[in-house]
Length: 612
Image 1 (cartoon, rainbow, N blue to C red):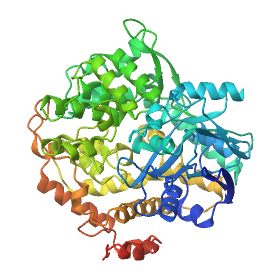
Image 2: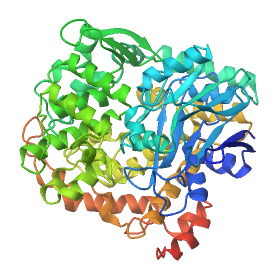
Image 3: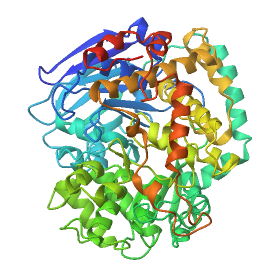
């Protein structure tokens, strides 16, 4: 079945346990395992930064197998940003090394009295001293660990100073330039004094039917290599979306007060490719290496290099903060990576702070839109909790709640997680996807804006609710399997190939509908995790920020458009109907029993959540 290493930092002991049949058959892997383990082992009311919280580092059945883009790893924990279920995934090859070392997942619990790193070394797990690594940047510490271990091919998960200082949106970095960016899991590791996790292994990953695997893999690789879209993804990666978003009134600008940026051409994929790109980097077994390696060639930031930027980074710390060029984006990308900060939340928090300063709502902020030096200083102050940075390190929602008034209307977050980089006043399906995402407002659960564009930006039709539910299941499935969704999203690699692949790897005769049912099971379980933590949670939690309902877009092709709250509510109720939830957004008993989640009912009832 596979093995889990349980690492108790308080007792400084490691126990190895077998994966249960329940985890394998009902929850598949990745975030499925994480959600179930958090339900079982992290009770309601646990402070996310306390020793009682846990971090699950999980692979999935497809991690590390010969097939396009199988290098993902998922991290799950209770989020310091939202106070409830959080997860984030990262590319590279950490999960591959972990499986080759003989483990499918790690459970990290307790707290160390001194800085440590966890070494997973070909079947053996140990807790090592890391006093000398504390205070190093995320990339620097990886270099140091590889030197000490005399192994360039070991794979690392690391945190930076932001994680050490418990910034609520601290990220986890892997393989120099990949991040598990969202929900603040870097802060959870920092609270446990875990500076890094290193994995290396030399064991074969068990495959049920190698011949069947090779057959489906060859079909998939052939499909990817024959795709015209693949070539553009190698050239510009996600950065090609900057101009696309700008043209579609979706590019976050000045704290999402606007959706069209006059300087978009200065931070676009085209200018990235022509002025700063020096190479590509792909994750394990990638057929469309979208990672862009960039280096500033001239000017005050000459010599700064980074793996990136991605679209989300360029949008959130670029246009959202009104920066003036690709050199500045590369500089801030590198700064956030070294400090160990999620660039999405960081860009949102900085832009929010600037708008609050401009409106007289917040003192101590010296930065302004377009002021790269001021933004650099503010980011550093956040990472080290200096001055106003100590307040901002809590994230947009908590800051807005303390400021009150207008700050609550311009805080661009849902459930505590800052909205990622698609302004959605003119995209009802995307707004619904943000409102109902089970970690807060993140696009990776349902990138629905393309459906808005396809069927009509102004429409609030029932099919949009149905499409969001479908995307949330398919895209969640990728985080359970655990592999990259881009070959499916961008190259239209048929989902049926993943059904074939799953059968070849595991020997389990699951159809695609069985796998999607497992994804639905996990999505309902994460909803119940939210209800357990917040029994008063109701429909109001599933709305995007007031700004999108109250302020029309000031410019661009959709000038004057804003979300219609009455129509959004109808769309949300239709979403609940499709899911089998009640009008408050709670799963019904019938739905939970259907999904073999009946065990949550009594726990929720004890808390006053009486499900229909």
